[in-house]
Length: 275
Image (cartoon, rainbow, N blue to C red; front, top):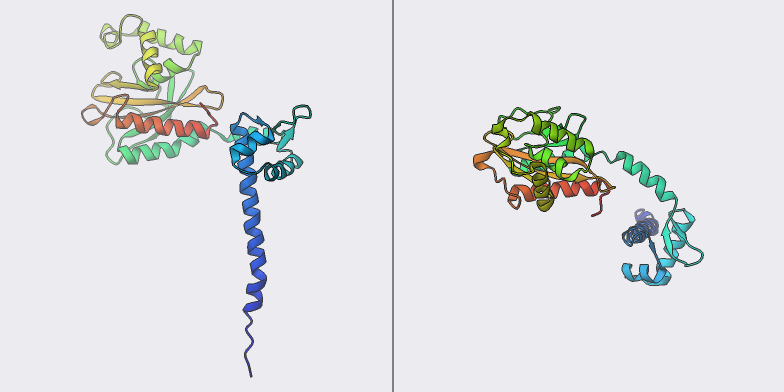
């Protein structure tokens, strides 16, 4: 008696489902590309400009725009016929912004810096009393420093504080820095550029895009710090790497500064910052 080949029918019937699933995935990818390209063009564009940017025919892009309009993700201005991001994206964006918490998003960056550079690194926020360490990562053989989560750093003498001082334009930051100067000993003041130390420190940070210190805040310890920006362009956090001065490249264009700046920029991008 001939044997029936039961596997052929299911295999044949499965093929159209696989093809349909691939087509749906491809359609979703193109739809997302249309949205991302429209956002990259400032959130408003004509059909011809959008098609040229995507490298697709206007007819094809128009079909996707029609579907996106139906879902409220894109809208069209009646007069100019320009397309712009729709109201549904506002709600999506607000939820994403609420979830974009700098400490959580910086944690993977701290781990990569710790493992890649074998240095102590942390993320700090600006608190009422000054820059405050919120999360710290230490290598297998950590440098012995008296900093931990909750430690408040100096605005004037630490690399972390200098980033906030140079890039966070708030009156309370300037006030705290002036209070530190008023309470400083002559020996501490001698470590600062003169005259007008606050203005000089701000200028240096703005020029380099980061802050470096060598044996200033802690003797025998050097550090590099870089800013993390939120979607408004405000400095919301600072990522810092520190280590023993003898084996730590505390230069604004060195390997450590390059790595810290890279991770700070990547974290800023996750927070929605677009330079």
